[in-house]
Length: 365
Image (cartoon, rainbow, N blue to C red; front, side, top):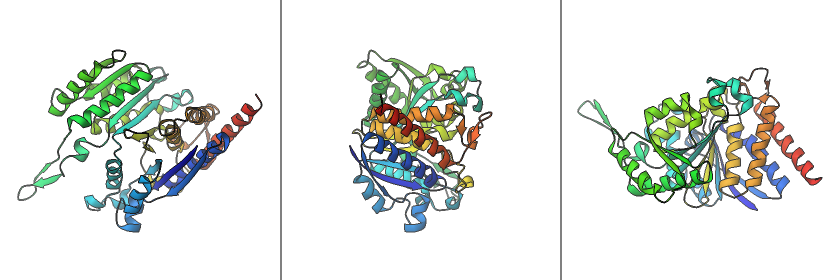
């Protein structure tokens, strides 16, 4: 298979974790006889510095001409005082909207070697394997433009806006995913307060009639936040709107022990997607080789699975990550007792070595 990939390293540690993941992906292609073309583009703060725009037209053109997008991370204090239209995050939001990437998938898995590194009790998070499905192009982040009102601009308005179609398509995607996992869907809202949540809940109930094999429950977002920490093992697929999904998925990083472990996929109706780690740009450790590349590497595994249907290749990457962690190798953020702390590139090297060894073994079976 041939893959044409847009590579957007972004800011901070983005280029480091991207380089590591591209090396892993090139190894996968060599082992499984695929071809991948990698074309770099600018996004976020790096794009602002070079072009004056967080999302240059050249980058948008590159993404539209590619089969999938790999994204590192955007943002940093350097641009915190820029006007809203020149914030790095505007580039990311604009790219999601322009490419129609409405479904954000954030898997959260407890890795046994990392249980001691998590702040939660091992018995609470052991065997947790859940998927947060976040609506990505509507809600507060994309409502009517924020504005400050009054003579002294002493009040502010942000608009939470959703269309029926926007809710229907993300709910449908969540039901489909629950159907091929463990058959349980938790829809998260704030229906006791928000009209948008009441509409959300009505659509979930209507959609449920077409998926009799999926168990459905509704849960308020505040209760969900509590249950994610108290009893995360009860969840299979969680579907929710943009802001709630953003907050809950970051909270869920406590299950893995680090934001650096969380991958994500942003999909549209076809197989096109953008793949990025959940973590931010961490400018305080940029360029020091301390960044955890596993969230980005696991994001490439999601790309292989969702955009190209390469399940065997995706599983090979995930198994390599499992094996390297089981061997005790990790970056400093994971704080594994007696862990063998290695650099960003060294951790990628360990995964590459495991992929090559497994491939060699398979040739001799």
